[in-house]
Length: 137
Image (cartoon, rainbow, N blue to C red; front, side, top):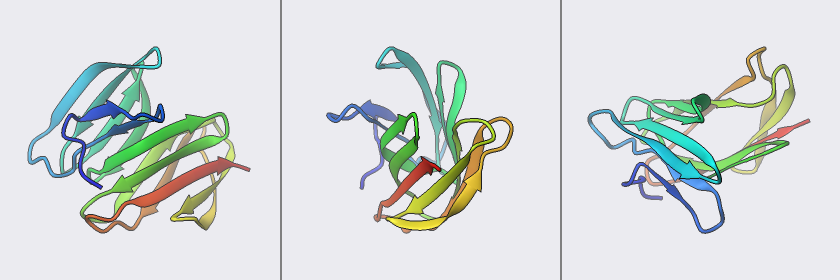
């Protein structure tokens, strides 16, 4: 899975892809329109962050490349790649229980905090995308 050279793009299936963990210095792109919303991405080797209409959506430390990012009423799903293990935070429903799957295997049930953030660690190897799926229980 390659990094996203244009920082953010819309895929043919209607999802978005964003992030470039190979950048040495911070790059950002704002006011990217997708399905009526405005997105802002900030990315480089230390962090990747995505906002929609000024609100938090996704963050990884260190930076990652994310493909086919899709949000539904029941959760979120995406492919992620990085050159080292990452801590990923996603915005979901407040105080709700979710099941987290990495590469199709359940890694545990987690509750979001009062602000709706869920934090998961994902083991990553450069050049190999990991599938992440978070589903409401």
